[in-house]
Length: 236
Image (cartoon, rainbow, N blue to C red; front, top):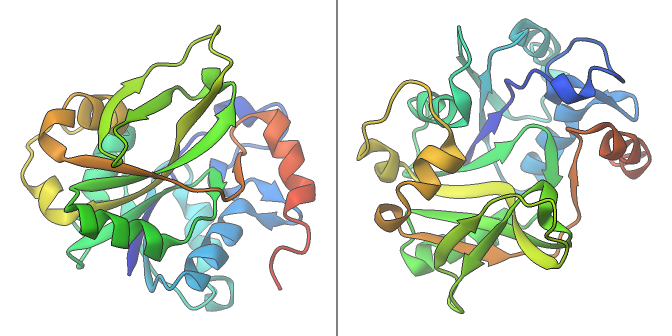
């Protein structure tokens, strides 16, 4: 099993609480946040990780040159010389993927779902891409996803300052068929969420499955502080 991790974020919203490091390297309970993602992926059976990196990516490389920090994962790097957006980063990193399908993980969120369940769901539905959803109260920060009873994605609802009801949000974990990426020609720089999933929704056969795993986004200071407690002793 392979996974692409989006690890090129600037961490702009965290500048008030951390030094200038890539977001996934933000210190959480005395470890870079990326350590917890690696640990989770290893425990889920992932063998190879492709890191989509850019901003100060050498800091990531320097830490994980020491194999003791990789939890046994094979690490490859897809380096952006300029920001490509989430879509450009994923499509570039996908060139290094060798499996027919692979996972995509955000480098600044933790949503520790059972990856095999998401993959099996995608294969059962013959989905081009399968999303992991999380039910939360107040989806104004994330927007939400509307699906059929069978899980086929109908639409993505934009963020709203007034929307406070319980909603299903995109948890930032995907399983995607590599052939789906190969069939599209897109600009070098684009948004995976807007320019691919939303704009191409009728063509990509997207499905989504709800998971009850804990979800946290360290991209804002409030959740970053929460993570310091949540991840204490998280790695044995």
